Image 1 (tube, rainbow, N blue to C red):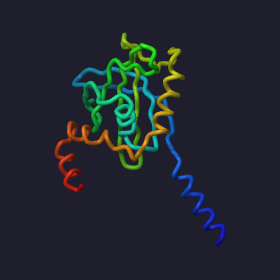
Image 2 (cartoon, rainbow, N blue to C red):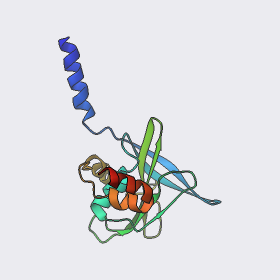
Image 3 (tube, one colour):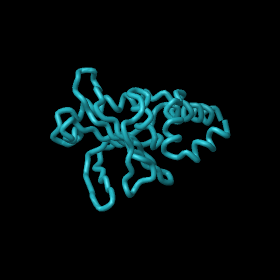
Image 4 (tube, helix red, strand yellow):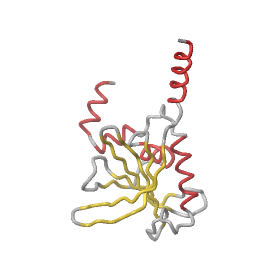
Length: 166
């Protein structure tokens, strides 16, 4: 019985730590009949809104949103973001996916010329992956500022229901 309690306590402690797994994938953005492919970093094991939230927490509200034909949540886009405070500007595209027993949030990073910085040939890929891994793992779940503007813009009816519940 002692081992059961110790095992249970260990399970609880381990579940408190981040369980995000990082996967590099291709994302096909389908809008009407046009398809564009980008490399993305997927963070599994969390909410499909994680990358949206960490970008909002660090850089404020997104510049614009769009939808791909094959996803539920919007794609949020931050333009002219100085990620490293060195004057170099990036476009950050965040996305999320949710299905039964599987979800991920993801990020696509482009430079000012719309070059995919997560491609195999990118010299910045590793540095950018490390930066966003740290942001995701340090995501302050108690900080809730992101959700009000997100739901107000994305799904006003859901926002009203959330606000009503208090």
